Image (cartoon, rainbow, N blue to C red; front, side, top):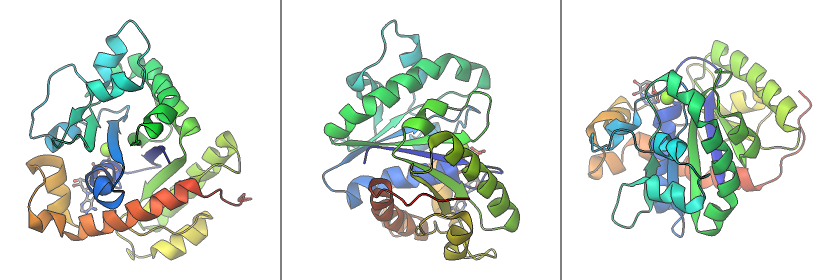
Length: 257
Ligand SMILES: Nc1ncnc2c1ncn2[C@@H]1O[C@H](COP(=O)(O)OP(=O)(O)OP(=O)(O)O)[C@@H](O)[C@H]1O
Ligand SMILES: [Mg+2]
């Protein structure tokens, strides 16, 4: 598995938080793999800098790649990413903070789609925070190239209804055999992840736990220590990371809906 594109259909269900949590646990769950978390939210999430204790070089990341004359190859993505640990097993490619900048980076997404196989061969899995589906500058090419598109949603009726419609559109554009799946943040509010996956016609995946403290630690305060590692959010992210790899490498049955 190589490229996962996380997105939402409506609201702010926790795409960025889930992408960051997956990035944190990925090398713990998949021992031989490294992970590159890419901030590809065209709305400019501005969340990833918090993950890095504000240790961010202005203008780096995706924007720096967009400014280069040549099309970035696999090495350029790794060179431009910030490593979160000495081994470089967790890396983050920063995005942008204004929608106006999103317009300029489409060639970078095309290059990332092309680089994904080589990154995979180099032992690097890519987790993209692609933001809200249907945004004017959404990274469509990454949805098309992804091994799995993962819609993140809450468990309300409204969330399920809007995500069902978005998944139908995604399947129509990517083809019925492509891997399109969904992850629930905070199940049983009121529907369970199992009920929701059945309604959406996707294989069930472990739900992400609601855990405001750990979510805040990921976004703002940095993320270390035993309380963080053992938090409900990180434990659920580990289950999800384990199952996502399987979900992304198993060819699904075509879903008619
Ligand atoms: N698992 C969680 N437990 C508790 N709080 C969470 C969780 N996931 C997200 N949140 C909180 O919900 C809010 C939105 O989260 P986040 O930014 O991850 O959503 P998003 O889907 O990326 O939103 P946007 O579309 O604005 O980018 C934040 O305050 C975040 O801390
Ligand atoms: Mg976000």
